[in-house]
Length: 113
Image (cartoon, rainbow, N blue to C red; front, top):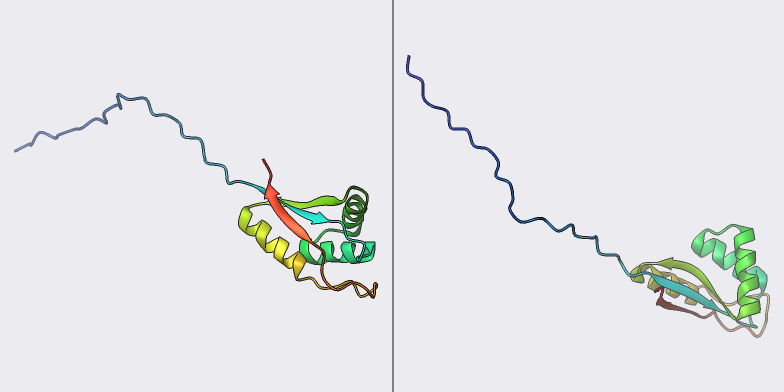
């Protein structure tokens, strides 16, 4: 019987210690809704429900905040998503409850950090 010697290899240990890489964080952006005297609370609440899915109470709280402080952060997300949501706010259309209203509310994006 002819037996061949089996070659067994053992894994070599790395001599360098591996540095644990922290995952890169994706920068976050706020979508800021700015106050407008040409839009009603009902308009703001409806827009936030339609565009963000927020329930009445959350929409009301945000409408109240934008009215009293001049601005409210409506979402914090990635830059691309923030740009989309800002553009959707701009395209939402006028408040039909106020005759002088000519268009949508104004929104901007800003870095969250």
